[in-house]
Image (cartoon, rainbow, N blue to C red):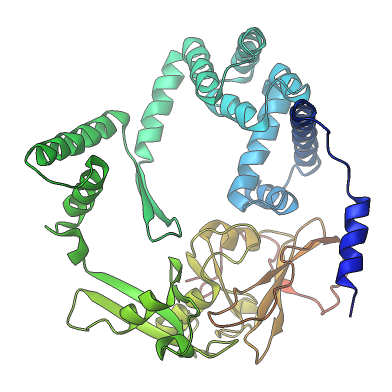
Length: 442
């Protein structure tokens, strides 16, 4: 057994010393922030150079590689790729401000996002104007920089700015995510004038109820009205729901307090899990219960080419979110790791949940996926190889009640082109594939 005390003492002895005064601490924080900005500028230049070295690669493939290298989601990787190109090609002065620490990466991205509808000459003009404004006003924050960049863009291309507004409104949508504390965030992206009308209506009704003696806070009334108006229920708590619950047997029998897992939501406390598991089938809440023995869910397979029915549910409950390291997006495709056209079975062992983007990326040239571990302990692990020869591991989350210590996810090791992984050749994308074959994603 290692000597833990000696290891801690050695780590303490080798750790850097800290500044002696509060003022020196603040000075060092400022220097570190400058260094972070300088590194971000270097990352942008390297990313733009990577793009120039791979003229035949799609943005989806390149963005996914950037995301994996930077421990970010594929979506964020594409945003960073766009940022790098924008800074390198259209914003040399803003890039210089990032390099010297005047701007940070977030504010540089705000500027590039606002000017992305301009042509290259307009963008260069905007770059000089925005850089001059920021140099004269280095104390500007995110919102001011965003608004000033938008103002410069509107002056340079009023017609394009109007078209961009219309395009943004065409992309209106609603999304939701759990905050992990018993509440959730519902976000509606709607035309801004409609947003104003929605908020005004909710606040007006809340004021009226408060004036009539309602003892809820204004914020509580507004939230309750939001739910009631959307669901059509006069009482928000009566909203019908369908819940898929994975609960450890010991928790269900009140012999343990291990949290359960609600699919699409995350962990819930043991008492809440027991209440959900005992929900009346005649009530508003419908619960599908899956019981987890320590370390595994049951294995399942299908004779069809599609992941459907209980097998589809099983894969979603096992994987929970997209299996690509650092992606964390909701599962949209229940995908064959080894495609059906290559002999892959429609089984839990050969399945992984992926978001739509990652499922399509998997089909691009140079990408391969293979199952490297699936055993009686319930561990399911997939290795992803990128076009540059880097490999990353993806392990399904541990079921509730399991105490197996996790291994680091997302490890990368560069290999030479054409090298064979230690576990044997994977079966992945084939030349010319841009969409999943029938039965590879459902």
